[in-house]
Each structure stands twice: as C-alpha cells, then as structure tokens.
Image 1 (cartoon, rainbow, N blue to C red):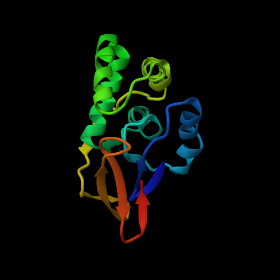
Image 2 (image 1 turned 90 degrees about the vertical axis):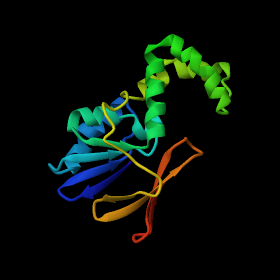
Image 3 (image 1 turned 60 degrees about the vertical axis):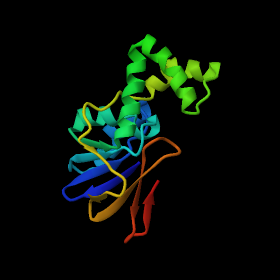
Image 4 (image 1 turned 90 degrees about the horizontal axis):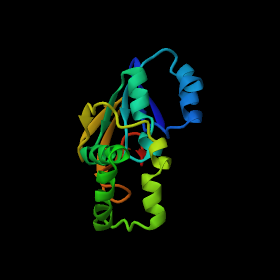
Length: 169
C-alpha cells in the first residue's frame, strides 16, 4: 500500500487484505500515523484482495471515497454476487474458462470457499470515480498519469509520476 499526503488529508493507494492483523494495523499504528488528518480517498489499483480487500471496511469507517476502474469494479461485484448466489457462481465457471482461466477442481473449490471471500470485506458501497487510461490524477503534491493495463487483471491501474520518477505498479 502507498499512503500519500494529500493537502490536509491522505490518499491511500491499495488497502491490504481483509484480515485481523491488517485491520489491527489500521486501528493502531497506521491510524496514529495519520496524525488526526482524514483519509480522503482510496485508489484501488485492481480488485485482488491484497489491493482492495479492505476498501469497503475503510470506506465505512472513514467516509473516504473510492476510485478504481470500471472493469475492476465490475469483476469485484460479480465475485461478491457469487458469494451469495450459488447458481450464479456455477454459471460463471464457463466464463472464467473462456477468459483463459482453466477451472481445475482445486481452483473451483477455492473460488467457492470462504478463503477468497474472507480476504475481502466486500465491495465498496460506491465508486466515486472511475479512473480512465491516460487520465492525470492530482494526488497530493504530485501529478500521476494513470495507465489502465490488461494482463494481471482486465483493468489494473499503474500510476506514473514522471517529474518525480515514481511508478506505482
């Protein structure tokens, strides 16, 4: 995760996974590190639990807005629906295979088990802004060009600060 000073507040890039240790860090040392300044915005680079697992939990506690790409939001909501709708979950298997993810029995069990579900606090209530490819985001004192790339996921955000020589990927 990246915690960026953003004027009188903070912007968080990615959240970490939903587990007791990470939640405890946010309720203890990370909260103290904010020094009373609010968490204003959360940018989720993609939907995987180690990047968006606590987005809903942090949004609920802080009121921060969440930014991500539309494709990542759509995947996250399909996955969340599969947790509650077994018929829908079964109907998704052929789509995973069409998209190149061969569903072995082990993978099928993982996708329907509590393992993945427990790593996510749920989908954020609302996405305040869908980041677009090439968009310039002003986060703190820096201007980051957003690249929306396919590969690791269908709509992952990579942030590049040319002036500062920084890349968040």
